[in-house]
Length: 375
Image (cartoon, rainbow, N blue to C red; front, side):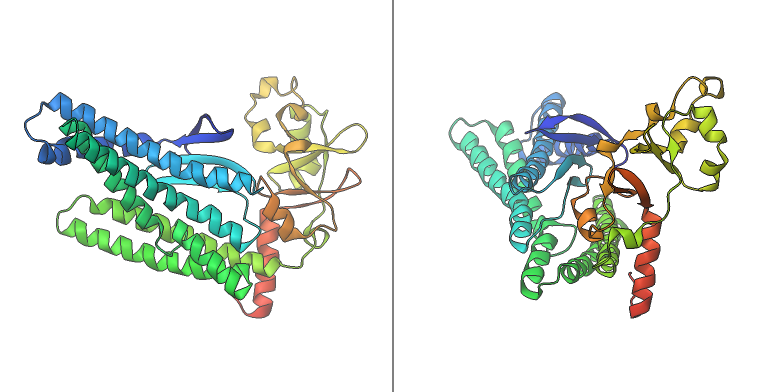
């Protein structure tokens, strides 16, 4: 997710924090300290409310992280590729490969809401225990608020609408019942579009009546609608690409020697004529060695372009998405840890390239042939 920074690893899985996450903590902390806690536990100092509000916001953020960690760990144990987890203002997201079966889809999707519900129950019990046994009013209020919020989070995530976990559960059920993965994705995506629009409309009504919290419903609704729309389009495109081999989708690629200096490569007429932002590189033996984003070279000051070589700025072949001409296109995309382009290799030598633009054009041609339009 753009605008996020690497924070570390949780169970070996990279954790990223989006810039909006501190905004979430601040918003929740201020609301908790300024409204909820004074109403539940009156007569305390501003400092006490402020500290307790911050503690509650951090506890909820940790809860969101545990929710995403449950998804990631379950997916990894099932053999599904997990790229990273990101916490942001509207919750969290885990980037992973697509589960290969409805059963695994159900397990990975369901563990998140289950974690939130369990956390909610445990935190509520801890809050009630703190209140009735040791009479800690302020800590118990924070725990009770965290517990109820986790329960609401778990319940909300069970709504049968993508990209929520409930939408993944709906997708698994339709996939299992119909045996058509892309159809299941479209069903869950359509539900997500509808729920997103309803949430946005409800948020606007709240704002018109002077309730500032309505802005969160608007933002969540728009995020859901946008994500669901992208999933509907992706499902239609993937369905159109079923049965296509990599060799049928690839286009010729103009490779450049990886030992060229930046100034020579940028001056190469062949590289400029390719009109591609990325250029495959080959080594002295003519074998593919990596993929170079030309924008990285143009960022080098002109005075230093003669001192650096293309390979120093390239993504090495081991980190590129590669495939053989006979490979199934959809299977390659499903297991990919990185988006296109795909370097097509035949016995280590560059045979062609498959870019996102090529895939989009191919899918749209096949959709047009069947009279279908992704929306």
